[in-house]
Length: 324
Image (tube, rainbow, N blue to C red; front, top):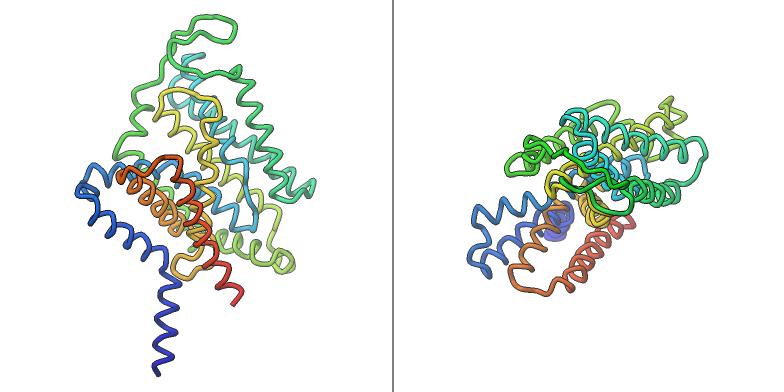
């Protein structure tokens, strides 16, 4: 009886380790930092994880088919560059600027799908190649520099366009947080409660069995990479709204945090597979940790060591459990 209770306790800790870790961090930082739980700081944490979470949720969908999209950072950079150039260089309205940026990232998704589905290149290698290509395209398009209101174009032509107030509003609190939560919930419902979501997991679980069951495997792989690219693009749009300009490799810094959030979230509630809610908690874990360490005046160059250790611990708990 006692052994059974111990096993249940260990199972509970394993299944809810992420949530318990988030709660533990909040308690530790609340005790050690007087103003940690102030409303402004909580909103600051949620705002800081919004873009990472949105990009990571896209990566989560690609992981659901047992894929891995390394091009998400470059795709975010491309969306960032295209949307700002539409505003500044061509004086386009908000709707058109966003639409053109989304069309650009859809091209990335289709190229990824072509390499993976038609050419049969493994996901990791295909998206690695795409990462460099898209990064190069974005840099070539911007001339290797930044774009912001008032800056002349590459040929010296003066620009009169400006980023619309509505677009700049998207990255403000609470809108960016609401956008993040809506995307997380929509993807969660899609993956968990729809036939297409279950098909994505079936493809990721056993591709051959899914094929024999009549599931169009290639089509669902393409859907997964479209999700991944579009959400990376939305992350890039919000980044453009946040910084008000297009910067070189602006989205590259979001790749590893997104990977960390998606992998940490796999063990959420005992799922043992990619899921949107777990990814949100994974991003929150990293965001809270980073925010608390900064408030404790830990040197910025040491943060990656701690974040890396947290990721290693999360991965170890996930994969060790599977092995058992």
